[in-house]
Length: 384
Ligand SMILES: Cc1ncc(COP(=O)(O)O)c(C=O)c1O
View (spheres, rainbow, N blue to C red):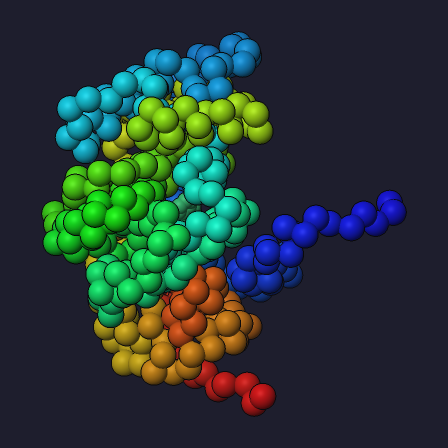
């Protein structure tokens, strides 16, 4: 086909830093080479049976639903959120169901920010926030988390300008697996409330928590709050595409307008999957395995002197600090893969070179082999 020039906005986008690596992982596996893939952003299990059984009874239904989702699902989400966050009031109009959490974030950004507005993004942080902010006409402003991956209130204050419209929070965090402390969140709420700055709280990992100290940001006093939730991680439903927004009426209705024009409703089977999940209290799957793997990985990593890490308190990631070895985690991950078959995501993908993300929701024997290989891996930086 004849080439068509792309729109200027596409120049703002970059292909994910992980793509090349993923291609290589697949290629190696296809060539029959041993690969220990710890890069995934998802649980390795199949759809929980209580979900597939329930959805199987609904497969003859095939019509559009309201763009913001089935009322019965919105009601179930509102009720679950009241329990989880301790909200007294939440109406159906506060809930918008989306095809996964990604469009929930984008529709919220389009509803909240004007061109030129700044959005603070704590780093290490999930890859897509910055690109979505740019696509929505805003400017992402990175703010480093502190050395424990907690919020650095001083650093955030320094980055706030008259253009700051929103902050994206993510706790438990991708890629660090850590949680923000309640104390810092409450402190931040004071700062952001005074400046009328909106918090977009990405709660996709809020059910996968290993610490009693966990405080969802939504319980920490933020007055201008949008919650972004979903079932991809807690229910291993990444392929089904189902998530939601909980927001004040104006923002929820704006996000609904956006989504009704560009996407329409989330697929009907996925909405039924969410209903089944909520009937089961959105109990996370694989929690016992995750706890066991977490313990195992911490124990193993403690034996590798040159790699530092913070213990994860949620999600299924551990963020390896390889700065004693190199800051070039792209090169380190590439060589680790080539020489040992162990695949990790380089920290460059999360705006923090010198780190690598490991998904510990893997089969125990794969983890064991991968950790042994990691212990023996001798890295030599490429000569420039
Ligand atoms: C922090 C974070 N937010 C959002 C998403 C996107 O979730 P979904 O697959 O439901 O679109 C992911 C997926 O990796 C994530 O890690």
